[in-house]
Image (cartoon, rainbow, N blue to C red; front, side, top):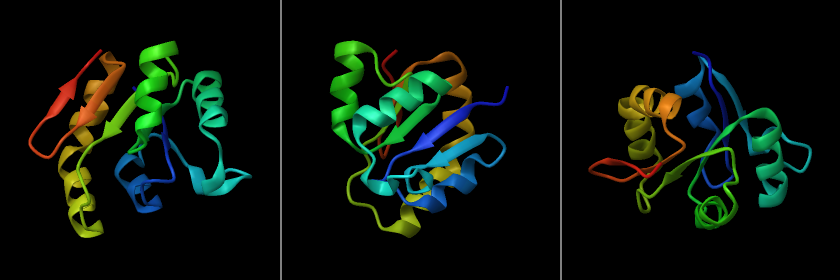
Length: 117
């Protein structure tokens, strides 16, 4: 199953490569780039059925309140170095993809991936 992802500005564009078999957009590719508003990202996510991957907790509250974005992967890994963040995604991207086929909201933590919905 080919999924659609949106990677938020709080995460590096290099993470796109870990989801390359899927349809992936990074915020830097949009007309407003990394300044794209959360409202616009939520609208894009709903319209295109995109799973938002972000560190921004505003999406957490938006999802709980109004179920936007469409689906959410909240990254709570602390202030990792880029090298460590890439390693985390290299190791966990297959599991994230599998989980998001059935789940609507997961939280990535250093020691586990929590399924909230």
